[in-house]
Picture 1 (cartoon, one colour):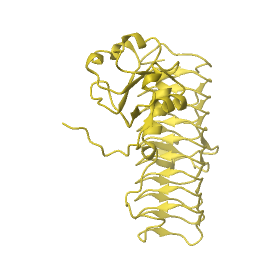
Picture 2: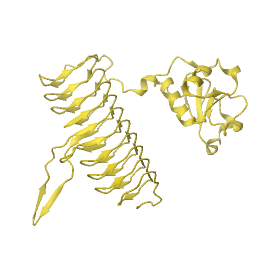
Picture 3: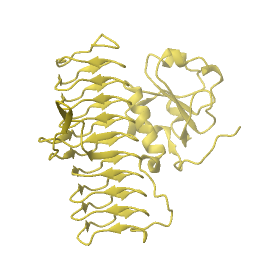
Picture 4: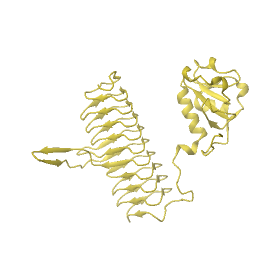
Length: 326
């Protein structure tokens, strides 16, 4: 079956130019003028595609590969058929990701649902005192409360709710069916469909036969260039704010509790649960389905393996060796 071309592919870029941009070296400059248009796996690649080989375990179909070029490390080069030029990189995975952003520039940003949408749909509810900078796009069925400010170039998808007093920066992508309350959102933030920001956390006190709820007066602060996956939830703080540090990436269906602090450049995979008052340092990696108990401190550059239960502090530069429990 022929591959779909639904994605917005570029008009082509020469291998020599692509190599320069992504920080790689072409194995044979005789191929430097050849154009590539799209990405494809080793098995499905055809003329005009560029593929990626990250390790030797992905070489099974290399002999039948029809790609116009392959991005790989120097240690893989000798295994690639001679007729396929390679873009050699010390960091091939990074080079491949950069190539994707060049070949599919439009796919790096959520596109309007309505192709004719320019500015504001007539089917939205917006308070009188909302402030929009230039170039904001708001899709149908969006509700925006009093005192909201939205920066230039920001896109708000259909069915989303922006609560009163929320501030959203410039060039953000707010997907469909999202709710944002009690929050400050920085520039170039991406919220995928179904994200819920600023709801109350799970903070209750039992007394005899009754259960009392803790008041929540904190906010959610999402710094610049954060990306949050579909259907993830971030609770507002009780007294202190919940803070997501700059350039942190969060996967789908992640739960972040009240008054959590997450540092700069963290990567949190899908279905992670982080309880209230957790403090996470910079550049921390948390793999899928891990749980972190309340009031835990995790140091800079720590790595937490999948399905871990973190119930005591984890120091900086530490990689836990205990799964499913630590």
